[in-house]
Image (tube, rainbow, N blue to C red; front, top):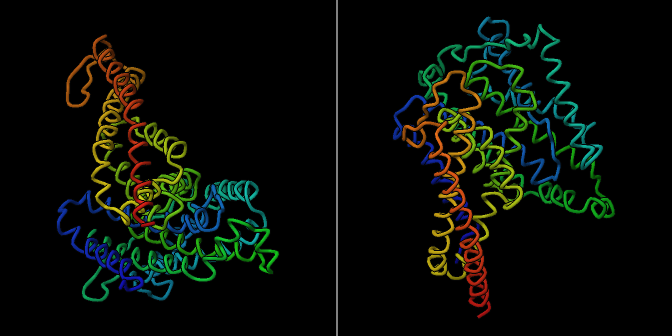
Length: 422
């Protein structure tokens, strides 16, 4: 007999244990910073998916609530430091950002959610441009391009915590990440969460049975803004600075890419996307200056060939795992062959991109380049020939291994259905 919710509880306990021991295993200041950024990104991505995945509302400006909450949080911490405002423990400061995000979400959401689809997306884009412009106009609050500086070390708190060391900030972000994730997950299981899905799938029928679709969308928008504001407050605490870029289109685009790559149809999708993109941005951006090109190609590839995202690709195999786990091992050779040919094609294509980018941006006559740890001359003929050959061989291999992969998956699904039927 399976206890309801036992699987989710065990997975949650495992994640919490991992969050506790991870900074003790990874003894690196940079890694700790990346993990803190990942926790903030997870909250923001889950909040955005409350709109996109749960409510079917594509927003191009959800960073507005993230950034405005960050500004409010920075001013509140500065006010507490100057004793202009009553003291509030920094551990609870994220609630200030959440309330600020909720306030702006209620105001803007009432207007935005009166329309759906493309009109809603364009309205959100307009508010994003408006907020970015106001950060450069209302200097006394936003401080223009310089942004607002703050200091998270206001005074010593419980158990001697000051939030001076980065590890204390990491655990603060981890705690709020767990709390926010659990709260948003439970919201998806409420009648409101189901009604939000219904408005996404068939708003006409929802109206027919007597529900106000605008009110449902407005509530979803407001709650999403609350959690986005909570993430913005943690961002202000983490980096001790909030600038105009936090409300801009760039921030909104990054979170949109995270959610789409992770997968909008599953709760864990935005979490996977946030982890992947944050790690790639932290580590790959130092390796290749063409990082944003790769990010764009990854996004386009996922939208075209795997619209369900990473979570969708994983969940495609869940029926096979449930019915006949041994079939997954039978599929392994086909997957390994497809992965190998894809890797060969990627090595060739990345080599071509890196050499082309290097030659187009270098300002000296020195064309020496280190690619894959190998010193070569980017102006020479042979490196280009090798990369073209690798890309062509990989593409040819993919054209043969991918149909076999699809055939292997189809066969496994057929046998899994037969196992369930019998």
